[in-house]
Image 1 (cartoon, rainbow, N blue to C red):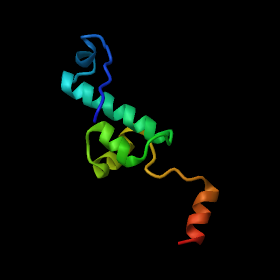
Image 2: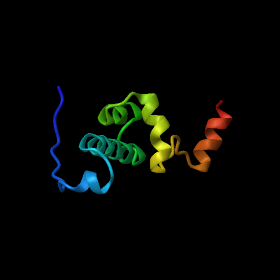
Image 3: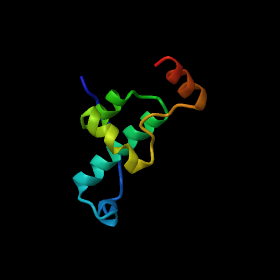
Amino acid sequence: MTHQLHIDYPEQLPDVLQMSRQQFEQEARMAMAVKLFELKRLSSGLAATLAGVDRVSFLLSLHRYGAPMIDLDEEELRSDIRNA
């Protein structure tokens, strides 16, 4: 089962951003998914589903939003290297 979220936005907003309505709405979905992933609220798989793309495409798009694919602090990275 899926649910819908309705967001009102000014009619001219897609034009201002030089996008079609569909492009703008897809961009908004992706931006929301990226932010929730970045905040560690969603896994990459769930974020990809929210964005309406496959997981690999989602992960490869993160750089467009300045979001890291992997966000480990120094100690987590050292631990991963030791356990590799």
